[in-house]
Image (cartoon, rainbow, N blue to C red; front, side, top):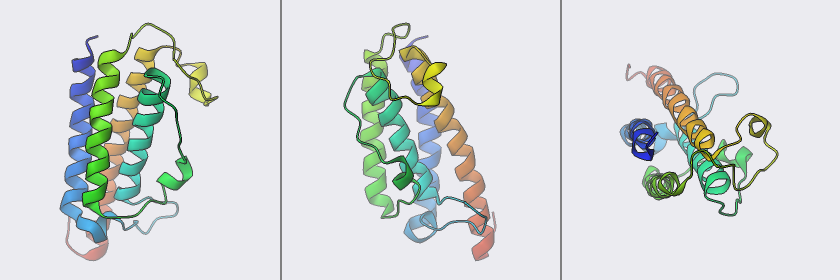
Length: 154
């Protein structure tokens, strides 16, 4: 697989998530649906930046990792600031994917349960795609729930 093939789909998911938080604006992007344990779109996208840094940046590219995964799901803030973080993470993801040797082992391991099954840089990058796609769908549902809660419809 060529990195650009993988990145096409990663970018589509990121573009969709960015459009959701842009459209919702600061207030709704930081709101949580009225469901137990639900996350805000802002928190979900913040988590996706963490996923990119952990799996592509740390495990594939070998950069140090300073991540508070739990804090990602509590994150709040301005959409404009989050979009800057997403743009920087996207650039890093592209650089990391182009610098990866897909069949080579991970450069770093953290003891994550999936590392028992994900042993190569290519598999780690596929996991990034998996996470971005699943969270894009989660954000679409979250957006629809939030719009319904505030009476703006889906």
